[in-house]
Image (cartoon, rainbow, N blue to C red; front, side, top):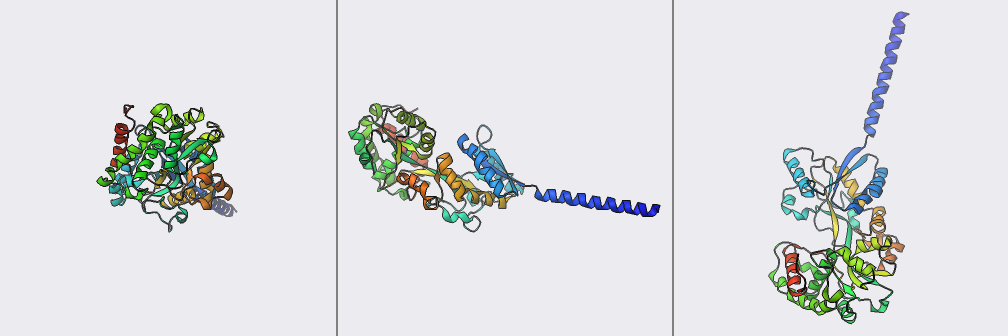
Length: 385
C-alpha cells in the first residue's frame, strides 16, 4: 500500500511539473518581442506615435511590443545611433535598433557599406501605394509629408483673386502692399522653400535639374534672375520688407490680421486651424503650375536588426490607410500614399492643396548659395545673424 501511495505521489508531482513547465513555455511563447523604434521628431509627432500609432499597431500585431526611443537632445542624436549600428554590424552584435526615423541618403557611404535593408513591394506590400517620387532610394521609406502652401484670409481675399501661379502671387503682392509675408529662408522652411520656388520659376520650373552633390554652375548662374524677381515684391512685403524670423512668426502675423497672405507649412497651418490658433477664415491653396517644395519624413531599417520581421510589419502598418488618414487628421501632415486611396470626403476637404507630387530641394551647396544670395541681393536691409 505504501509503495502504491508513493507511486501515486510521484505521478502527481510529475504531472504537475509537466503542466507547470508547459504553462511556462506557453507564457514565453506569448511574450511579445520588443521592437526598438528610434525617432527624432518634435513632441507633436512622438505624442501621436505613442498615443495613436503604437497602440493600434500592438493591437493588430500582439506578437510585438514597440519601444519608442527619442533620439534627440544632448548625447542622443540620430547620428550617434547610426554609428552604434554600424559598429554592431562590424562586430556582429545586436544593435538594439530596428527602425529609425532617418534618411540614409544623408550618408551615402553607409549605403555602400551595406548597413541598410532594401525596402520594396516584396517585403513591404504597401510600398505600391506611395505617391510618385516620394521614395528616393531603395533603402528609405517615406511615411508622412509636408509641403509649403499659400495661406490666405478668405475674409479679405476674394476667391477670384487667390493666386494660382507664382507670378499671380507676385502681381497680387504688388497690388496689396504690406499684406504678404514669407520668413527669412534660413529661419524656416516655409520661407526657404518660397525662395526655392522663385529659383525654380526662373530655371524652367523643373526641380529635377537640381540633384544632390556638387552643384551645377550653370544653375547657380541663373540665381540672379530669382533675386530680380523677389526684389520686385521686396518693397511690398509686410512692413516694407520686414521678413519674419521663423515659421511660427509668419503664422502669428496671419493670425492677428497683420497680413492677409503668407507662405506656410501645410502641417503647421492645418494644426493651427484645427486648434483655433488660426481663424476659420484662413484657407490654404497650392500653385497649379508647379507646387511649392516640401519633403517627407523617412524611415530606415538596419540590415543587422534582430527583428527584421517586426520592423517590416511596423513600416508597412505606417503606410496603411488607417494611419495615413491619421497623418492628415491628427498631425496635419500630408499622406505618403496616393490621395485617391483616402476617403472621398477627406480628399474633397483638401482639394485646393492636393498636388500630384512634392518637388524636393537638394540643399547642400545649392541651399547655401540660395541663403547667401537672398541676403546680399534681396533683403539687403536685414543683417544676417
